[in-house]
Length: 299
Image 1 (tube, helix red, strand yellow):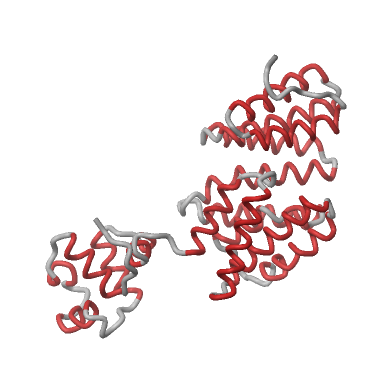
Image 2: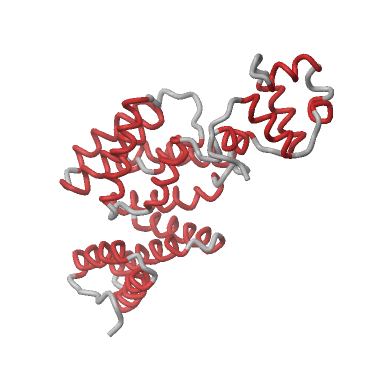
């Protein structure tokens, strides 16, 4: 069993090699000379990325796993923060967002990271909007992120996640271009991590954007595509969220009986599956739209 001590590149390579019961010759042959391999494991020389890549392929260890082992079998801080952000799922969990932003700011004070700075601004913007309902003030905070991202010639995995949560700062013309660019990059990243699955969240966020601008027909088409992908991935929360938004659409189109039944099922399902805060938030949204109170539990 590995320990939690952080290791050097040479120590990590040596640990994986010895744990795999391989000799230096068996692991490094045709990759590094005898002298080179001894110097690397003794931390007297750092191998090139190409050499590390060849070694890891021979071991069938990914680069991410190598970094994980080198970090004492722990995720790096940026990965931990991003994982927690994605697990929050909804803006109703204000306390979790505030706690996460505080910890990111503490980390930034010691070790600056452009990505974590952007993530901190995103959290600040969401928190501010939730507390004040000041859309323009929230937009001004989040726009600082876009000023960084729009300068890039290419977007990367972390950028996809940030942009997916920034739709509310754009006008309608700009968002159409951004959506297409996101889909193009998602196709490029289809085999990387869960990038392919992010398409459904891009679609859902786009649908909420369309709702704000009153583009209901396109919103309905986008939600139906979201539901199709969510069902494929067995993503229960997204299925319920998209179904609820479709209920709002049905109400707007005049199908009151169907929409009320769908909204009631969605809200009560959220409550039943332990997502009470989201259920309450949707209940309040439904009350604003219809002036009808939906009970959180079936009577």
